[in-house]
Length: 501
Image (tube, rainbow, N blue to C red):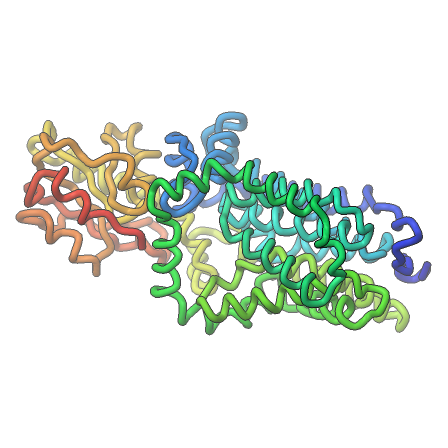
């Protein structure tokens, strides 16, 4: 053991170093306190409003996602209250587990107390981790799932015990219930093991058993997608076509900043260590998998944060050599300072620490901050227009996206509003207005989205949304129109009103 760093030389014959449970749990608990303290500021994110409504309509799938995140939204609000604080308890807990699993990966690779503490501190102060811990999103669970798969795969490769395939299959199956992207991780790991070894772990019927477990767990969602003509592939193509160029441009910068710029040293050191250190030839598949999937993301235009789980695993691998290098030179304070600075910058960029009136500068670099502001104000604008209609007996509310519809369905009942309708994503599957709802129609839309009113008659903009704090987010200035009615019965119009982007 190196007394300066707490590192233990990794071998597969000696036992693993002790888990620094107390220190890791203290770090995770401190992060949890911060997340809970800030969870009620600003408001719901547009995706959270959508998840709330999806969770109230249970299904084995939705056109843009599997069922796990909406079900977690329903669970969290049912147990902890139908508020932003209640909704965000589950993502906070999942992120606490993410910090713990990352430290366990460091231990799996022979890292002692010091490296485990560094890993936990780095993960707990990473921008992306704080972001997905603050609010419920599909990457909240996805990051943890990928990290657990990496831990179990390392355990399989280190011990050569093929029974770990059962646990890996179970986690992959659960991952598919959250996001089918996890199948790329599974395929990448198998391909990397074939390429760089140890190949003999693949020569086991336990691998087939693990595949069977994964298919069994994921089968309801797979069958749902098949029965609905694989709508998630349609959504994925739309993301690639609409955002592919931007995603490719931002992919490399995203890898450097999504955790925190100083932490790039950790995950790059982890890649180098697992590839070059003879002691870790058994773990070389991990960095190879990252390279393979990074190239794939660049080709297809995938979002830069898709590989965050793998980056955290590589960060966990790099904590020991980085801490050792600085420790041997008496520069451990540099590591501590880097973590402290990263914590401040990450919190400022991802958490609601600013007054609403000061959000614009942060919103320019992280638009998810602004997406949590203005939804009650939008709903009140719609309520004022709706209440002003001379005849509401056959009126309907139609919105351009699921965030607007979700806000109206969440806040509208207290203002006397009926449910909102939208053709966006799974909202289109939750029903169209009755054909008897002949008008007037109140439409909420982005100002430049003039196509939406082409299917309605005699439309006039009567209001614009104002969040009251001049936050320059997506919905600021959204138009609220009143149209006399649809051009044709809703049942005929509905197929052409559906959209996925």
